[in-house]
Image (cartoon, rainbow, N blue to C red; front, side, top):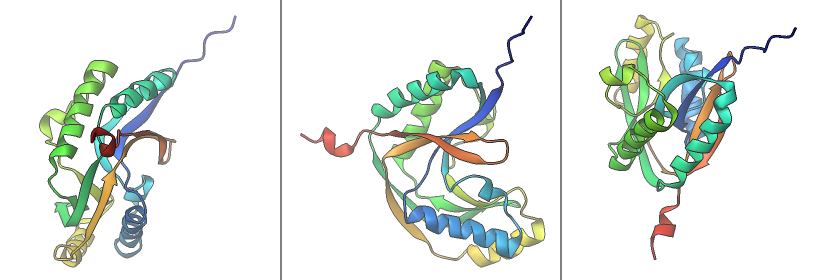
Length: 194
């Protein structure tokens, strides 16, 4: 008798991945933190702004997840996003800050609500943590003395990048790294103008 192989769950999260050249600039900064401050954990995922924190789901539900996220994205408009300067969550995290953006906050809230109602996804930590969009450069493996030095270097540095958010991306954990799995185009704003 053959028993059914258990369907293992996988880890996913949903994010905005910036286009070139912003992607490459952010990647270079992550590599700089690895080389200068011995913090390489952020290189386990591509540069991104998290919209929905990591969650587990059975792999057999992956097609449904993709289908529902496709429907969600089709109903949302693209928008402009600005990354500006650097900030931190002391004593471990240094990131590129995201300018306050009502369209981004609406997208994140709508996505979170949609994932709860349509996919039964719940992240208890959302209750304690307000949405603070950012693009992480260094985090959990950044030691405190290196955090102090890195923050001295980056706190007054200027940086600016602008891009159009025209898709959201589902990332999947391979067991070692987070890899983009599927991107979902947002409806272009131009199509709304008649």
